Amino acid sequence: MKSLYDFTLKELQDEMVSLNQKSFRGNQVFSWVYQKRVNSIDDMSDVSVSFREVLKEKYTLSLPEIIREQVSYDGTVKMLLELEDKQSVETVLMRYDYGNAICVSSQVGCNMGCKFCASGLLKKQRDLKAYEMVSQVMKMQEYLDKEGKGERVSHIVIMGSGEPFDNYENVMRFIRICNDQKGLAIGARHITVSTSGLANKIVDYSKEGLQVNLAISLHASNDETRNKIMPINKAYPLNKLFEAIREYSKNADRRVTIEYILLKGINDSLTNADELVELLKGTFAYVNLIPYNEVKENEFRRSEKKEVRAFYERLKSKGVNVTIRKEFGTDIDAACGQLRAKKEGVISE
Ligand code: SAH
Ligand code: SF4
Image (tube, rainbow, N blue to C red; front, side, top):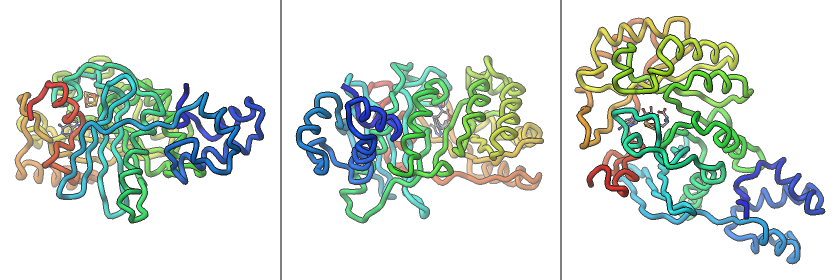
């Protein structure tokens, strides 16, 4: 059985034709799935009863169960979802003035092993299929539908657990499904993919012809520090990474976001700020400074407010476009991977 959440509109039209239907049948089904958001094929009332039976034999429309749900005082919602093979993934809904953003996981666990990250504590179990990423969006949309205020998921960041470029094809398919005007219609400019820096995939991605945003988890201003906290840097050191970023800027004609977690005593000095300014020369980038969400089990601590300010001011004074990320749901461990890591007993409550 295949999930209906795994098809782009075009594929669903072709699929219907292969079942001796008009391709328009694909549009009808796609609209039931994403616009009317029914939970069962039986509810597709403009599809004949006999064809609904055919659909039920071939496809599912089931969504994962919620194992755990936490709602923060600021309205942030975090869900741990159970997949068919009993693996679990987490997804987070964040409310901004401009809309509702959801943070999607792309793999169960992650193999990149970044030292500061809770997802990295759990080795990758497997990649997520496109429909399993779509399901995360649909679960949060269901949550909003139940609130009854007519709100929709308007933005997607692929920043949950997993390295999206280590699951490239499924992630691209997921983006195309969410972006479809006749479906969830989430604009490409409202979707952001975040990568730890797989340079070769950054170049591939620059040629997809998508208007989707790209964010790079940099988190260090020199190879020595980056090698220590992000093992991927040994495969793609900073010069390779920035070569790819420059190529991306050229091919995609898009600005990149550089994510930089400020870690106390590790990467937060003014010398680091100056090194960062040097790295960014000749790129079309904007820097997002991220307050570290502490994980008790490791040695990393967040930088003091004073250091964060000084780092920010230094970048700004040198003409870098920089912001400090707003924090969400700090009372519910909204940082990626923390909820699942707790369930698996890797980090404590
Ligand atoms: N694997 C991808 C996407 C998922 S991680 C990547 O690394 O880019 C999304 C972002 O959250 C990354 O920038 C990551 O470095 C950051 N992150 C991980 N653990 C964090 C923590 N405890 N506090 C704050 N940010 C964290
Ligand atoms: Fe994986 Fe990203 Fe966490 Fe690194 S920061 S371990 S790449 S999820």
